[in-house]
Every structure is written in C-alpha cells, then in structure tokens.
Length: 179
Length: 141
Image 1: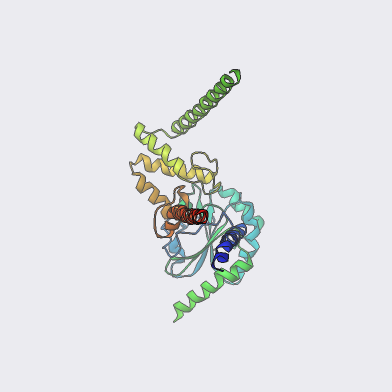
Image 2: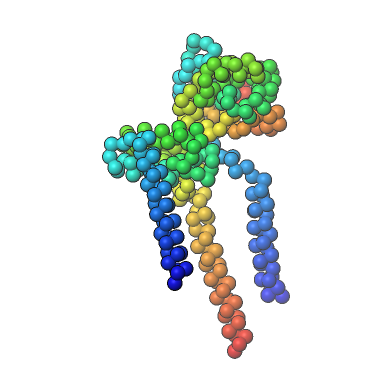
C-alpha cells in the first residue's frame, strides 16, 4: 500500500509542472513589475508642448492625476486615445509626457486623435522616461496628491483596465483624503 | 583522415570568424563611445553584456538596436565616464527598471529557490536513486 503512493509521485510532479507551464502560457512576458510603485515621482522640468509654462510635477501638486506617456510614432497610443478622451470628459485630470518625439508631429497627432491632456511635457531625449522606468509607450501612471506613484499600466489603456485597476485605487485615495 | 582535416579546418574557420565578429562589435561600440582608459572601455563593454534590453528581452544592451537600448547605452556611457563603479551603475538602473534589467538575478530572499532549487532537486534525485538501488540489492539478496 505504501509503495503505491510512491508510484504516483511522477504523476504529481507531472501535474505540478503541467500546471506551472500552462499558467506560463497566459502570462505576458513583456509585463514587468514596476519598482517605482509607492515611490515619489522624480522631479523634472520640461518644455511644454502647448504653452510657455514649464511642465513639471508641481503643476498637479495636491491632486490625484494620471500621467500618460505617449508619442506620435507609437501606433498603440491611438488605441487608447478614445478612452483617455472619455476619462478627461468625466473630469479625470490627465497629463501627458510626450516621449522621444518631434513637437510638430506631436501637435499634428493631437489634432488628429484629440487632446485629453491638461498639459503635455516634451521629453525629447527620453531622460525623464528613463527616470520613470518607461520601457515602451503607452504607459499610464496613477499619481496621488502627495506625488506618489500608486499604479502603473503598460500598454494601451482600456475601459476594463480603468475600471478594474485605476478606478478603485482612485476612489480609495480620494476617500483617504476626505477623511 | 581527409574528413578529419576538413572538420578541423571548418572548426578553425568558425572560431576565427566568431572572434573576428566579437572584436569588430567591440570596436564599433568603443568608436561610438570613446572612453579615456582601456579599463573604462572594458567596464563599459562588460556592463552592456550583463544588462538586458527591456524591449527585445533576449538581447543585451550592446546587441540591441531598440531606441530604448540606445538611450540606456548612452546612460551607461555617461556613468562610466564619470567613473562610477559597476555596483553604482547597476543600482542606478535597477532603481528604475528593476532586477529584470540584469541578466544574472541577484541573490536575495525571493530568489533563494532560483539559486538553490537545482541543488535541492539534485539531492532529491540522489536520495531516490540511493533508496531504489538499496531496494534492488536487498531483493537480490
């Protein structure tokens, strides 16, 4: 009787391995855990796309905002633009970081696809992108009123992701502020 | 005999072309990123080999043509130029991109299984082997 259990061991190992590998099939290898979560957003000052005022985190001090990293050369950015426009209409404050782009092309792109941003900073050299740990566009950061990065999404933002990941965090942040 | 010399020649040829490609690659990088001392050049080259390109994840920073890899190469170059140590440079990058940027995972709590797992499995294998061969020999007796 005791022997029989040992004969089942390879089967268990097989099931365990199979389960692990099966899970691996549905994981996104491009997803990286962000080390920036819970950390303060780095300080920066960039020229602004649409105004003379410098673009820096001081602009949204004391507010919970989204920081969206985008570029006119990024085809995936067009996918999320409607979502961002809808969110902006609902009163969500969205700031844009134009990543390694040409300012004229960025302006044209905003004209074509719509502008949901309160302000857009020009990160032509990609230095601020490196400080934020950006490795692909689009990326969206949720930044709380204290300037802490609360969440980060890589890839186009969808309404599903907004409702599942961003909205609960945003609501609990606002509740925390009001109490 | 003829085959053996043919294979020998072929192998030598391969070896030669590989080392040639390596030297060429290194030269190309250092001419793009001139550094003061050969030590700094060596540091720059070995750091780029140890750092992952986050866009094309199976390429290292020296191999990749992705725009982000170019930016990070420049970043590493500036840090090497300002005489930062390997530790300081990798810390600078992992503070932004996490341990994933390192090809060799650091040894810490969450990676203990990764580092010791193979040894544990090897020991389990030895125990199973020992037990089963013990049983075999007792059956023989």
